Image (cartoon, rainbow, N blue to C red):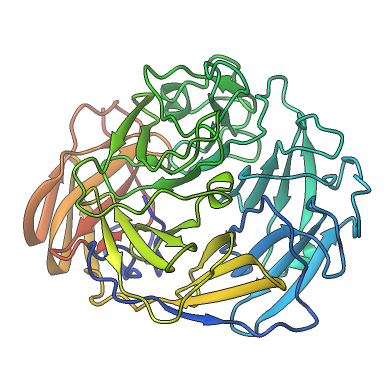
Length: 473
């Protein structure tokens, strides 16, 4: 599920008070996006294509793998971090290439490449992962890197990883799946589209190094084991195999990979929403009954990933149409539909990638303008209602989890032998303030992790921190 902020209480579980950040108001309560164009300054990088713009929750800045301001290279060479409030960029790593010199990979630094969607933030291990990408000479790179993220980006370092198996990742995209501690890849195999789905299960640095978790086994990692790519074969898959947008969406059930856009191998854009369920290993098309649908992108916009980003505060996908009359759309998995947003300012009118700045609650759009780089900031409203505060958590010898909320909310508990949980109680949809959930079928003399989840009538979710209990004989 989406992460929350909490203040830790007493570890005995007898008198615990947890207060959490509002993160998931129900779809339909986000009003206009207020777009403004930032003013360039001497810290700004240059512009090139095939970019990805992740948000780093640890330094609380937006990350760009791009080029220096005076570079004419079309390949990404340098890493910069953007402070939205000060409108300043900080370059921390890179080759500094000013043309297509095509620096090669080293142990501690990626070479120049088109990353093209193969970058994700590992929120469990505080890492940025990078892989694939096309290099100057044409082949697809067959290695990976992870960058350790710090509150001070200047301390970040890269580590090279060469898995025993790796797909040809030229024009696909990644999504990080927190409950599984894995990276999901979907994209064209530059062939018959029979090898488009892969999963990389991370164990190095986790609580189970060298061993797959239950969730990882369920998701299909057993083929090639830990810290390697395993190919999976869903019965069906989306048609948008080239340049799709992928993200993790934890709003429904156990969560799913949310995909939008992409094109066929022949270049035809697919204006579709799909969900991938990693536990069922299955794709399903969604938003089929939506009365609002964004228009199909014309060339050259259809040749790039869609201008989309997942807004964690509202748990919705926001798409910016940057051709014709600039328009913003929002998709929610909660109602499985799109909504047209009314916006002030225009936003980007050229090809753009976006990040969601969680600290300042705004969109950061980085685009290739007619006269160089454009940065657009789209201010979003704050959540309208705080979440329920969870208090007085306790567990009885019969494994009944009880808690109190200050607002009428539903009831559910995630539990398992690790803090990845893996099991969920059936949700009690009744909106109540005194909650009790019975967990059955537990192994005797075992320590279980559990997490409480309560959502109010507006859809605003609260989760407790990870807690443990020990079963009897």
